[in-house]
Length: 135
Image (cartoon, rainbow, N blue to C red):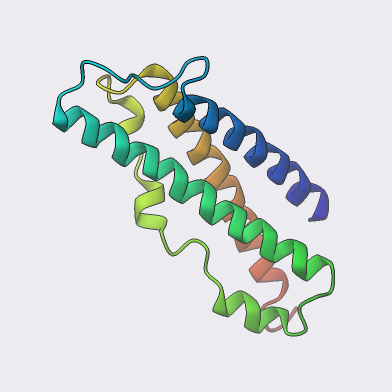
């Protein structure tokens, strides 16, 4: 599990750098002019969706790293207390991935953040099963 956690962490880090570049006006950055208020709200809400996905994933990855480092005494209890995927409804929505009103780069970031999110949700299911009663 440690190798897949490290690989996921590396992927999330790259996605954070790409997202920061998009948001800060770097190459392939967000449009700053010519959007209606409704379009601005759409863009901002989808940028926040990326933030929610990456924040959930990072919280989970950091929790797993503390478990792996032996810093958690009762893993089962800790896994039950911390649910970084409590934003699943927001994070699972993929309708905007195909919305042509959004900039191509934003749609790419949405798709990639969703892919990473699903990968880590799958890892969470595996980890929880490993620490469930009977294992």
